Amino acid sequence: MRASPNIQTKVHKFLSEHRLATLATVAETKVPNAAAIYYIVDKEFNIYFMTRIESRKFLNLEINPTVSMVITDETTMETVQLSGVAERIENPTEESANLTRLWTADHRNPNWPGPAVKLFEAGHSVQLAVVKVVPNEMTYALFKRLDEGHNESFLKRYFESMCLLSEKSRGSGASNGLQKLTD
Image (cartoon, rainbow, N blue to C red; front, side, top):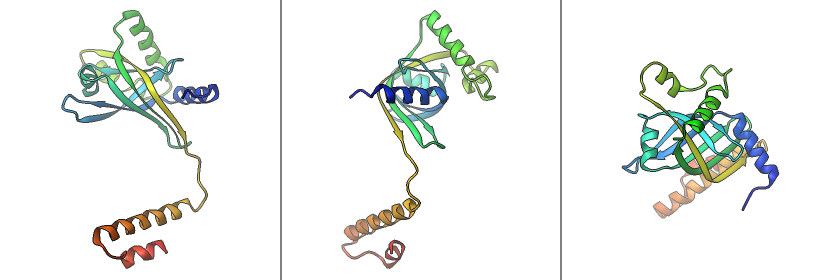
């Protein structure tokens, strides 16, 4: 199902206002790897980032280009989760244009443009790559603040479920300690 134009606008605005994401890749050995990346987004929701060609994420992408990403705002409790396919930008014109966009996207942030560039500038990297992630699935969530008693009710439900699990595994009633916590 395709999102409404209103939701698409909200998601694009969210992605455009944030610069830090977690990128998940998978190694040849099937071991997952997650890394923080600085990114930019285009009008079609494609995500671009820079990385060193020696980085674990880049090496993983060359073997398996399927990725997952998450962008979160802890203050507003918003998140975008996406999966897609990553590809290195090989066309020099497209690479240059996106490199410029990446380099200048958040120039007031002292951490921008990110560790990959700093390592490259310090001579710790042979070459940088511009990578484009084309999303094939995207989920947007906004977790609004719950009522004041949500922590207490969550803990009560959590401990009740733990009691049920304990009863099943022991074949007897719940312990007094867990019962007291849920009263």
